[in-house]
Length: 530
Image 1 (cartoon, rainbow, N blue to C red):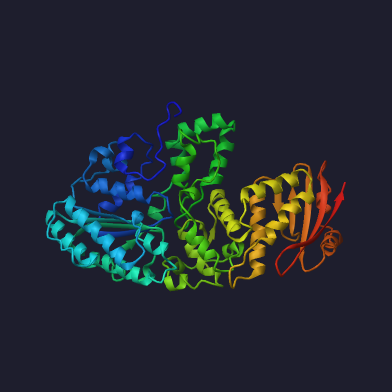
Image 2 (cartoon, rainbow, N blue to C red):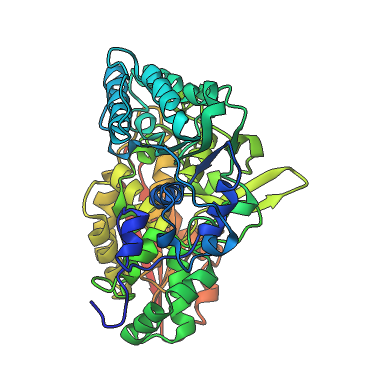
């Protein structure tokens, strides 16, 4: 470990272990103080995966356990709190492996009995459903004081089994379990439920009128994730170390960190925040040391749900981002809609937003619409690479993209085409998806991935222009027409004129022909302007 740098907890861990272990902690307890001082309230908050939800739940648990010593020097300790202890029922679905209604009910029942055993509670019958056991446990714990209920990753079972025939039955088990909190509300001191998605339309929280959703609240928009000020103050020594190791000046270094990991906005007009798990891994003094600008967030979990959805629809991300969303569209998902999203890319917006692949950009108050964007380069790269693996030839995407970039930098057009051709012909097409949309999406995604290694890539009136240190490529591609027609269009419309001023660079005019049947590259023509 680098000298004088505190350790960073880069995986899920408890608040108590974090504080006792001397790890870096960005103080968010002022937000929690605002929540816990409100007696009898039930709160719900959704955030993308690995965004600090589990640590938040663990911190709330320590507060209600009265462990004031862990909060010495933190905001809540100075704000005034009674530090009473309360009986706590903590249920974390993160380690729930069940995918059948019977298995889920049994798992919940075991969790209830484990809590009962910890508090020395007896008389909970094992022969009844989990919801009834849950109700009995609350009643017995309530004699010791108002009961605190903390639920982490409440939606994981549904998300993991979204395409299962049993998903409605799983929903029923969860709905019955959660309804206990409504009927026993007068016995509860505090409830906090968190997860990635909001499934309120399917009735899981039906009737819980006092469940307050803080997911898009401006007050709590920066409760999870790091603001720019928090980054520069709490990680000052890591930033200094990273600047020294990377050789970049401070402004350039911070700009690159921001481009990679900042950009999440959880309420209209709110300040953006950095992904905490990415920052933790990036600054980890035992690993990256603030110098490895790569994607960490995508490595912490799979993208199966999002990619399963993407493969069932005609997904053109550029087109999706051009659409505004009404506020009501953010509120919830309907499982039936998720299972029949085929042909309707608009329905995936809320899923992409809540899972962290999109975030709020701005609000059009006149139209009453919100517009979205990808948060940062890390997320875009992860999404693009997953799409390329799903729809492309299934090869080593990073290697193929790198080889194409090397060929373009060296002026080796033929080599570039030789790599591009099998990649494009290897595209797979989900049943019912538009071949044209998939084809265009793969081309656009490839170019986005190449952009990071080249000077400039742009589209528009010209299908594609690529600028490297020594070469400029003006590319036009046609479908079911010969490559000569594409090359002629470049010359007839003078697409290359503006690039003739690029001193010391060779300008390549490239026409490419693709097949509409299988999208194989049929032919290509090149003319080089010295």
